[in-house]
Length: 209
Image (cartoon, rainbow, N blue to C red; front, side, top):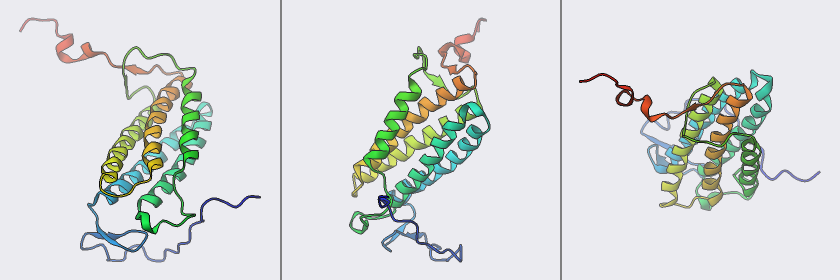
């Protein structure tokens, strides 16, 4: 059996609060203290936020036999997001060769899943609004948080070293979440909600002023 590519966690948490962050700083993996509003902290903090929303979507997907295999995929992505957080919490000079991270394997896997889930979806004639099923809405929430994480990561890459695979991964993941949100409605036999500009108050007004 081949050796696993990443080191297993080596942590022992006995205390949750340490008081070391009371003055607005936190520690990176290499021990450096940085302000909590720095771009790096904002980036991997948003990845952590995204992971939490994934937890909600996984529960919803697991409730229905038609979407349980999507729950398994989302669970895998949760672990990948934690790997992403690990590498973002580490300055490039401190990265260990076997430290958890995102690689081209994860990016290519998402591309395959995008193609597979999108294959039988109807072509879009308008933009999609979040709606239909709870699972679809939760996946849209994940998508928008993922886009925010991507923007933050691009901003960080303009200042510090960021693995190119990390940005690629978030870009593909947001596309995957869009496809999964559409697929979820179809799998649960609920019509998706399309944008209709004239559903606005000004578009539907019929009386005179």
